[in-house]
Length: 412
Image (tube, rainbow, N blue to C red; front, side, top):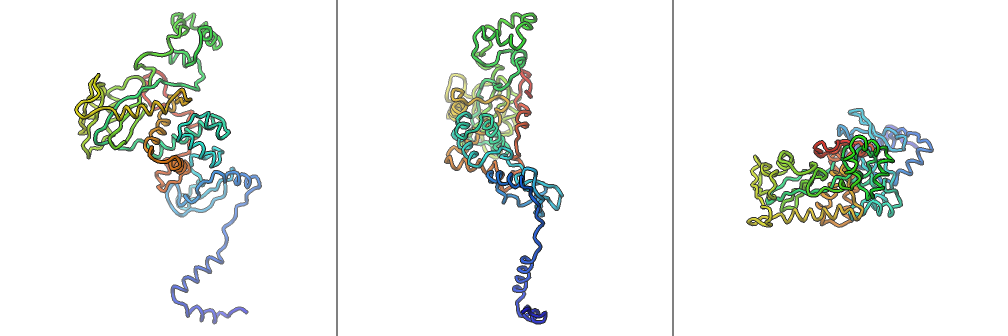
């Protein structure tokens, strides 16, 4: 039998203020109207079930990714079955995996873990592809996503102090995947990097309608191409990329491909000057290359030079930076199938930088850290927004970041 209004008021009057408030909240929760349910077509329901293997951390959606407001509400689903949210403050909508680097890869979490493990162990793309039964282009795209996420998340933000060693690392410019014959013949002034006999070189030029043209316009250049003298230039040349490297006694590391050919003074000054912590006493140790002469002007950094033919001056040497370059040579071992094209060299070196930074961590810890970055499992909103989703189109249309000195275009 239901209680009368008078009996209810009498019961409530006997409760303390806190108890009345608790009762009110309980009633409000129990009898609140359920939120309107968005009807999901059968095909979208199936898609949502398939997408669930990505295991995106929905608990990260604590606020609007644009303005940071906590006043957000569900806003249905995308055509792919991904949850959408609407911000009541700025009126913008976003998806639950906005900015996630894994978005659109159609790989399960277990497959991603295998890929990340392979990258941590520096396995070749073909080996990783076999392990997860996927194509090499798929694994290549995943590696670029990982490298780009590391670059966006960390960047080169370390400041160097104490004894700091600087040197250059040179590697041959690589255009693997480029299919335009005229780019190689008329821009790079060489044949593509393949082992071809004289007859095979002739056949290559004939098949691409270039033999007769070269024979008519520049027969000497044609003979140069057919002779094989274009294969490799000796010493440091414009056929090589300069990777500027900086490492200090605390193992802070900076390495960035900066230009074609030899390092020049303007580039050394531009890249190195912002790297030093002016609050600490710092000594930069380099070889006798003239490009370093004015790189530290105005920074308070003392410059020590190791003359050519010597290994040590006073207590200074270049052993640590040489050790980094030795590790880099192993990391980029072409014999093991690890070839990095010039177009993506900068972001691929970020993976090497990251592996060096966390070299003392266990494999499982490294994989977990990378997976958290890729899935936007990042507490800071501004940092999370830097790690944007990278599409194949973003990668193929990206601009080469180095100074090409006019030897080839920045967009290829």
